[in-house]
Image (cartoon, protein in one colour):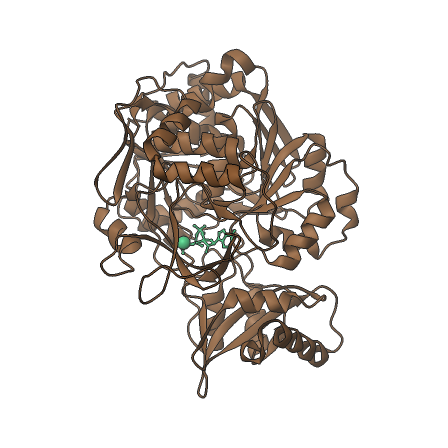
Length: 625
Ligand code: ATP
Ligand code: MG
């Protein structure tokens, strides 16, 4: 592990030297005068005085060497279509979109809220903002009108871009009518709304003087040439509101230069994505993973990126692997929740396609339990790399570094701290570092590396308060997750700090218990929550999805409890195991444990606007009855 260790050591011991080198991976129109300005902790300014542009790095820089190479491949199994754009074509589309935005009054520094389905125009809009120095804020298409309005009021956009509709599981989702609803209640509505009409909503209403049709405007700007705005490295590139699993959404603000360097470096050291190869990230542009690894990073690296509108099981559970085969995908990025969905399907689908192009599958977003990690590794016959990060960091915080050294993986572990992150595990109350094998709160000693959030949009005080004040007397960034490090230096994430159950004075992470439940061979996935108990304070309660139909629930429940006893001891044994066919999750695939817990304790389940399928909550209610 010497190469990795030395790489990481140097990134902390000689921050400036290390990042100065990484900065050479991107184009600087004007060189920076200082690698890091940390004169106002915890605010870190990277590559001070340097001028660059994200869109230039993602597109223009490649035109000479790979203008005719595919840049963006859009595949929709929802509307059964596919489109390909070379770097040259993408360059033209983005310039046209930029000209359209300028015609609608958008200037450098203005915000543009993008509320769009997974279509190429969404990518054009994002890159066009980057090109002219407008700040995009992409809002995930699953948010309800009130949530969208709250984000609009915080970002105060000059322009909104949307589409008439999207499609999910073959059903039309009306985007524009939801935008109209949000704008009726928003206090800071934009002057203009640009709409890409897909023909999914024949009855789409239009507001005269405000609404503009993409196609009409595009016609007027065919062949437009819009130069890149050269931005100081610390200008804002975008705002992205965190998904809100843990409460009121925060506007994560990202810079330009640090962001470009961090993404370029991650493609080299972590993802091993080479120019000319293809990357397939199964996320959505509304999430941070979509920003970083559908749009920016693969393009900055000169790769072909796949943008997929659809679900993993339609037309059948082989669709992703067909895409890997047909487009010779080298790097793939998905989430544990999707893998658990596939685990319930016929594994033969994975064997049907030629996956020889695939180097690695990366997974992030929530804990990857060991049984699922083993299952997908064996099914694919490829390295499956669990890595851990957040909307706030923009790129991984813990990961294996196959581009630096091929260290062995441990199932269920996202391996080691990424270069640039001084990761500490701190004792919850004393704030002191814990020993190997002891549970601690995952924290980062600032400065945060390039690419991480610069601040909370419009609220520096909230940035410091929210992230850096968990331990009195210490300025450390807390991630709100529990972790443990084994004697070999591997980290394991035990779940969120608010997902801890206190059973008769024993503190147990919900993740640990979920892992134990998942060890039973007939369990596909589960959610464990703590519910108030008059005797023990709290007791774990499990909701599990079985792989096969359960004839005898009592028998399976007993077996699952015995499995937990064996793994963790009787103290962790759930009070009951309820069987459901699906778990309540956000559209980004995160289990809504807080809502389950609220229902179990007879409280209001809270904000459910991003829930994937409300039927899942009904199943929890029925099971509790
Ligand atoms: P919010 O912060 O708004 O409540 P969120 O934390 O779910 O929402 P994200 O930034 O998308 O929003 O998710 C980051 C979190 O996801 C991490 O803090 C961690 O809890 C979890 N996570 C991500 N990757 C992993 C992983 N590989 N293993 C375990 N947990 C992970
Ligand atoms: Mg979070």
